[in-house]
Image (cartoon, rainbow, N blue to C red; front, side):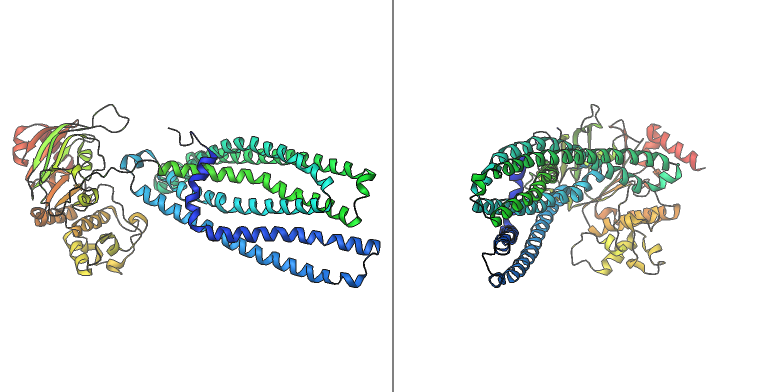
Length: 585
């Protein structure tokens, strides 16, 4: 469903209020300061009356006007203080609101199922955390500041006008409903353009992220022109939507200004009647007409405010749509504490979302605790899909997956994953030291010696000891400072440090050289009886000593047995072995 469907500005703003409510003291302080600041404008303008009446007509002596300089200084000083208080308080409130919402979005994204991240690019999700949340700041602070300040200014100036001449001021009240209806009419247009602008911003982020993430491929295959063209297209689209927003705002402003000017013209016409002029002094006329001209500025600000407010509400709706998306299901009640690692798949079938073909079909096998089982087969045969079900990255499978005799969906999600270590083919490291990467999210009681031991078991110490800073060497973004084989050994060390009863190695030795591969095979021999190990491998030389080898083909188990027995069957495993052996000659 489109994330912007059923978009109600009023409903969205009501959902934003709970984020603002805890900081209402700051809002109240800012609002009071804004009202006082607006009142000072009317106060400064009201000083014109005694000045005009006193000097222009001689009814007041110059000595009696000597308090005016002090009044001007006091009002300007008060305006400066209240301006600072309002700006600081609103920045404090908006900062708190954005921080709270960003934290909630970040936490919610971490709890989203893998299928959600498969459907959405990281660039579009980053846009929600950064750009969308900043637009919320516009809705919760800038908009409110302008609304309170300009509304207070208009009210203060209107009161000043009515106080000096209610006959002239009443004409302006007729224009108020017309202006309100005009603002409402353009709100829908602003909202629709904001939605388009929001989507385009996401595409800009995605395009930039793809270029930055795949910069080597871009250079290698000469894709600079392709990426520049793609980014130019989305940037131009964003420019057009932004221009449409400015165009609507630019057209609405003079339209509303024209309505206000017609009201002003009516006041001027009414003032031309002698019966009206007789009731006014020179000072009253000056104050009334000066206030009328001053009202134009806050009125223009209020009409221009609608564009920013609609952008903020669109961003809010985008974030709330994400927060309304269901997270991973965690209905399990059992603790996985003390599990031994006995696995059993019973008639497990699975297909990915929006796919008609099954990735797994009636898969059944059992792995006793402490045994090592290898999964082999052609690419796309379902091996990675099968092991992805164990940590419940996907929950909507058919059949049963048992861990120590209990369906894995009956375990608490965090408790289950605490007992599983995974080393995938695509290793992800953090921009931190090697020690921090190995000990990522480990308990605080993990010592430096434990980290060194894990690195040694993974044979990562072979290259770590040669680095000037050893374990304190920075890995760089996603381990860019390391080779592919070095990254994999760091990932293996991280998995070994976790010391779980179930270890999954998904092509964990694919990027290793022959020497490192041999070292890892020796390491597997050292710890494989300490836990249950599932190994996915294309390099069959790494799995010859496994307790059992399961051969998968088209989502099903086609063969199973030891290395020697499978070679004797002359089936798919034998063909894969012969092809690999021939290729290595």
